[in-house]
Length: 367
Image (cartoon, rainbow, N blue to C red; front, side, top):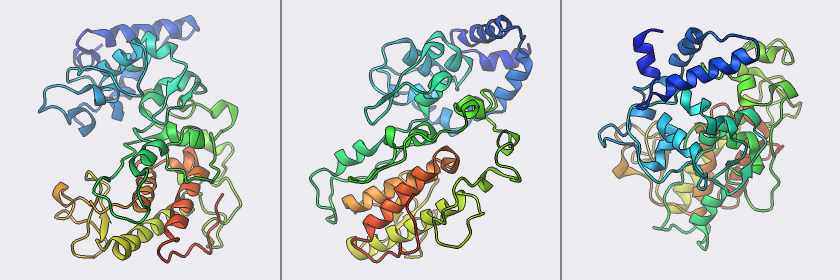
């Protein structure tokens, strides 16, 4: 194996090379010798291996990755997490060194291979992920319904509170959205029923039965056996219901979700202007994502999307809707992982805002 590739795969302790051997032994035990070079090439082209990305360089100036982040942003961190008693979702009690992305060890250590139950931020522990349990450790988000409830508890729905700040679900929470109302990754409005796990057919019901475990890609041919005639994933349709009332029930389910989402942004902006008196705008690329819309044009420009201009006039009602809006942005494949859950969260956010400002939901249907 090329020394440069080997160096990339290695952790500080050399455990990645050991785990590559582990993969080989497992495959040969099943009578199929692995192509380590092909596996390595696929992994190197994946986001998991992109050592220079923000996901793995954010802490470079600090010289270490804190335990609050290390589990999902370091091969060393997740290996430590899975080797000990898992008490707090996604957290370890010590920092780790820089330089290890999501490498072989992260998914092929004994702790990862033996993992069966995964705790989620909502307090729920789920044991139905099977061989994909390790994927759910990081793809679960960092917040839940309970987080939002705790932040807003005891506050008046439409009164601005200095105690409130934006609650961010975090990024790529696909395991949480897959489990829907079981994991409670979105903000679920009291009294409503939410879709649980979104099940595919039995042989396509784990993360790695759809995604290549090394490149992370999904081949469209995986889907076209059932969803015939589609050219892209967002063309997939699983329900004849006209959710967005546009008369088109042949379009992909991603379209109604996008329509609900666009309407929610408009409703959030209307509510902010009319109720708090401070206009709001969203920027998906800049933390903390919601900013004061100083020029009132409905967008957060580069000049507006700066931390000192972050939106601070939150009411509980506004925060709950904004949380669900962000969830759909940061889970870009939610139309595949749990489309009905997405529509339910967006519809309920619109309906809740409509109790205070004019929001037209007459033509929409909640799953």
